Image 1 (cartoon, rainbow, N blue to C red):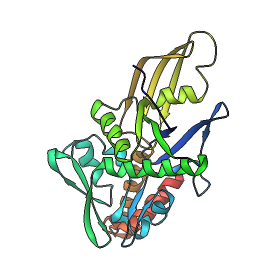
Image 2 (image 1 turned 135 degrees about the vertical axis):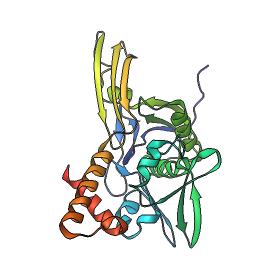
Image 3 (image 1 turned 180 degrees about the vertical axis):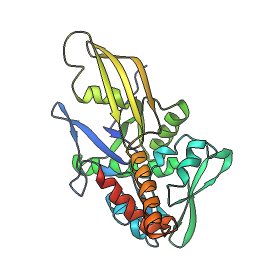
Image 4 (image 1 turned 120 degrees about the vertical axis):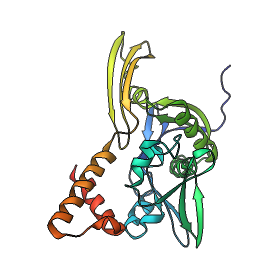
Length: 274
């Protein structure tokens, strides 16, 4: 039975490093710019003594508030704290991570002078709220519904956790769709006649997907998919940070890994290399 939908609907690309939101207008998808004029918004949430910051405002202050600025929630969502991948990532994150009920990872921050814990879904929900606000500012109406994209290689737990993040954000999640399929739709590949096979290569900030799609009369069929839910630009940055940290230690006999501000400056420089 078809789902009943009322109110405006948007599509949200909830990314590891950046997110964006689009709305169907004038027979095309309009990717909406945020209040900074950017069509992508950093998937960052920061907590200070006075306020919570999301997006550009959060990323812009990260060097001064590294311990309380959370990013990479997509790398945590739907995973266990004891997951070897999570344990390997911890050394790259300035924020504190602990094990909660059911071995779920919990992010610990200082907010308004108090210690607070958040689950990855809650952090992702804050980014989703920001994307909804970006859409509402553009449309001028309340947005109630969303289609959210996920990597094709996301498992059931990661997909459900993404849905949960949408619900926490107050969104009716109409569907979770695979990022390569969304890319094919965005490029209008469903509009071109005849049966065809298309290979979609999607290397993002934190995930990597390759999908082979068969498209006929607007119907998509996934023939094969491969990828890594933990491979992306962040990993290139991490390798560069590790390399230059060792180089600095070798040349200057100083270990900067204990200095979060120095590490953040180094990471920002590494992000700009590629």
